[in-house]
Image (cartoon, rainbow, N blue to C red):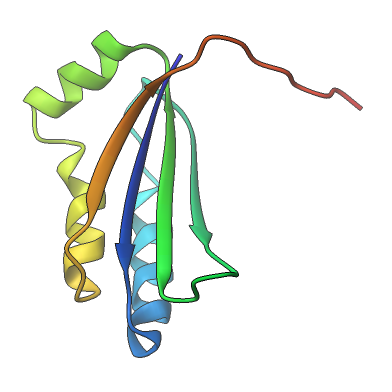
Length: 98
């Protein structure tokens, strides 16, 4: 698995727009995207992140080449933010099953 974290500072008046645009964008995710989360920091209320869990780095890079991942960057730009992205390899995972 491969995880990307896109983050940006978003002014309060743009929060609803970011949430609305994210909900619309995630309706048709690329096949290699396993999970995605739009999260809002409690300690720094202007900070928002989109955490994306990809099947593998190759799949992520394929969509990066095709500019498909730019959709999330555009979400932040439309909300008045210039985001930054970090990328991470998953070495271990735990999932609780109920």
